[in-house]
Image (cartoon, rainbow, N blue to C red; front, side, top):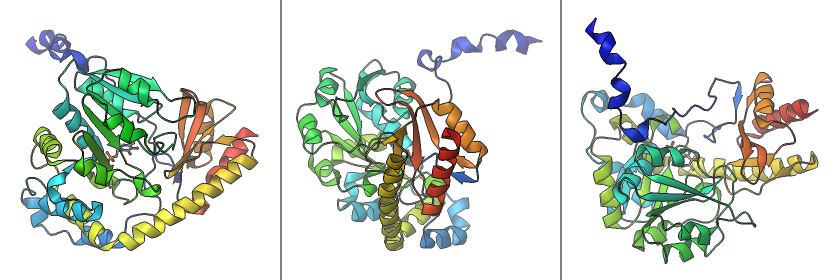
Length: 356
Ligand SMILES: *Cc1c(COP(=O)(O)O)cnc(C)c1O
C-alpha cells in the first residue's frame, strides 16, 4: 500500500507558517435567539430579498464580473468617493487578508490592538507575518504611541472596536497616519452604528485604507460582500492581491439592490439598534454590572463568573451571546449583539437567570 507510507509525510509538505494555525471555531451551533455574531437580527432588507429570489439563471451559469464594477459604483456612491477608490472582496475578511498580502512581505510585522478583532492574529500567520499585539491604553482608547513604536509595516485599527465597542478618540487616527512607516488599515465594520468614519480621509490619504462590510448593518453576512476605500494606488494593489472573479454574480446583484433601494430600511434598523444599545447598557448597570460604552451594534460586559460557563448556560436557555474568557483588561466578558428589543430582553432574562 504505497499511499500509507506517503500520507504520514504530507505534514512536511505544508508551508511552515500554516503548521500552528488551527481553524477558526467559535461555537456556532444553532440557537433560538442568536446574539453572538453581530449580524443584522432584523433580517434581510426588502429589495435585497426580492432581488435574491429573482436572481436570473445567467447570474449562476456565467462567470461574474471580473472586478465587480457595478458593485464598486454603488459602493462609491454610498461612500461618497470615486469607484477607482473602492475595492471589493468576499467579505471584509477577504479584503483584510488581501491587503496584508499587498502591503507586507512574509517576515514583516503587523501590529494590532488587544483586545480587537480575533481574526487578525490568524491573518498575520496565514501570510507569514509576525503579529504584535499592543494593549489598549489606560483610558481604554488605542495606545497609538505603542502601536507606532512597534515599527510595524502594517498597523491595524478597528473603530468601533470589536469586541469592546470603543470608538477611537478624535485626532488619534489622524496622528498615527501622519507618522506610520507603512499602511494603516482601519476596520470600520461597525461604523454605520456610530457618528465617525474615515472614508473621506482614506480617499485622499497616502497610507490609510478603510475596510468595510455589508455583513453587519446591511444584513448580508451570508453573501460575503466586503470592500475597502483608499487612494487609487492602494486600492489597485489590494485588487491585484485579491484577484479577479471573487464576488459571485448573485452576491453582486443583491448587494447593489440593497445599496440602491434599501437605505431607508437600513437606517431605520440602525436607529433601533442605537436606542436598544442605550437601553441595554442601562439595564446591565441596573444589574450592577459594568458594560462598556459602545459605538457598535453590540455591548461588552465583564461578568463575575466564567464567561464560557455563563455562555453555555445561556445557550441552554435558548440565547446565544459571545463569551470572551480572560479578555485582556476586561477579564471574563460577554459580548451581546443588539437587535429587536424582544431578543435583547431575552438575553437579559437569560443572563439574570444564570447569574442568580
Ligand atoms: C464581522 C467583522 C468583520 C468581517 O466581516 P465580513 O465582511 O463578514 O468578513 C471584519 N471586521 C470586524 C471587526 C468584524 O467584526
